[in-house]
Image 1 (cartoon, rainbow, N blue to C red):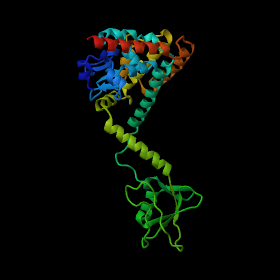
Image 2: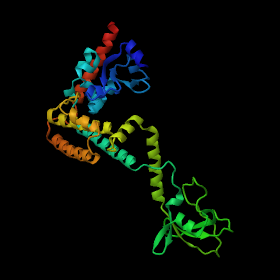
Image 3: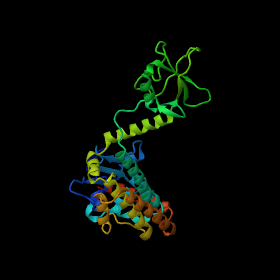
Image 4: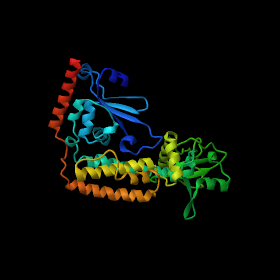
Length: 356
């Protein structure tokens, strides 16, 4: 089913502008995102082809089936509670039955984890981004050889340096396991013997062993930091996946303000933290930001240092935890009441469709 079909069949319950425009934090280049709620046709609801959501290709317009929408409200998922609390000037369509869903019936202490907990995950994500920006990785992946070391005096020497100083080729070397010593190998060198080399090729992900004649004497001991190499490969893959998938405009904005964090991401992190505080203090929250808009814009414009924002967020999370401990919110919504509301809306909607 397409969005056009939803509307042509009069299946919509609700439609509103969401995101930055709803928060009052948009700028001239902000996209207009639409979110909505629909009721699945009765035949599909009772049949084998349920539909949870319908969206366009870019997910700029997303519509959720009534049951999924209510499920997410019960779990206090921020995006869904925000839809229910949409500012009046953002609402494009609202069926009278949608008014049966009240914010008070859904807000609970779960919001501590869904709002503040999600914000905390975004801070961790920001730390990861900060690490990527501050520590860029070369596109060329390092070789296994760069994680190998040779015993030298009372210390060690990088294998590549050892080979260069002795004018050895890694292909003329052979390795043999040293019993009971993980990652430690006896190192041999003889260009006249058919050793396997330390690695088989430039793209090798491990060292290789050779069959060594008993008369041969080792020239040293080699250590391969396999765990370090594995961690490096994982981080290298993640870094270049991030480079290839990142939003270039947002990345350039991040680099331009020079604070090494995604300012838009951090702005929404604090918006969620402020929402969580409002829920604990008042039992409700405002989607449209007013009293904290100036602060959020300062964050968006990169006017703070990254470490200062992390400290402010950490202190705010501690405060939110204390507020939720003492607030009067229920632990979870009244599921029996929510179930009755869901049934009333669905039956009322199907009855209206049949009348028309």
